Length: 173
Image 1 (cartoon, rainbow, N blue to C red):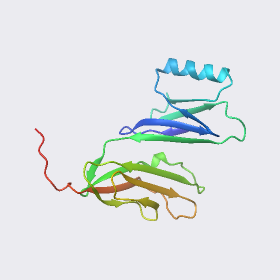
Image 2: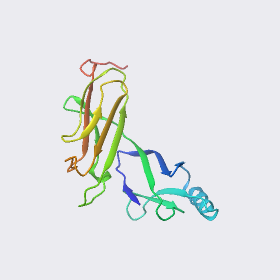
Image 3: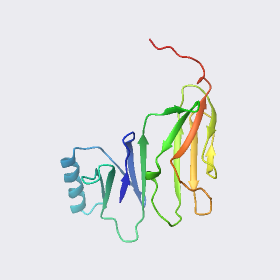
Image 4: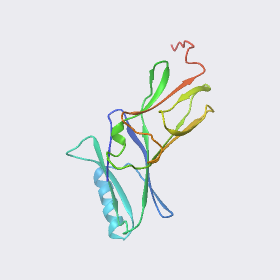
């Protein structure tokens, strides 16, 4: 399985859930990671390895070894990036390239937790998003897309939010 990366984003956490087992990703030097992956596979254990593609530097290849036929793997990853202020609000932008390119309808769940130093007073999510959102701190935003939801990602997924003190000037010396 491959998934895209963007220059402004970093992979913060990777977990794979297979049945009741959870495999947590660890960042290792490439040679050490390859060795541990191969050892686990040779021992008959399920193992996961993610690495940047040599030919496609903006893609990460995720290998899941010893996944049995019919077994389902749930892949969860955290992305880290620096927020920007646009139109008087912070914007969490997830590039469209992170969503599967497919003509067929598919479902996905996007979940984010926003922690702010002051109360969150406004949250905006995409039109037609089936979303749970709150202005509590931390703010939970959950966007679910099913084939029936009407939500289509034709550009980056954007969540805007404002905090109570955004208009207050700050001086850092």
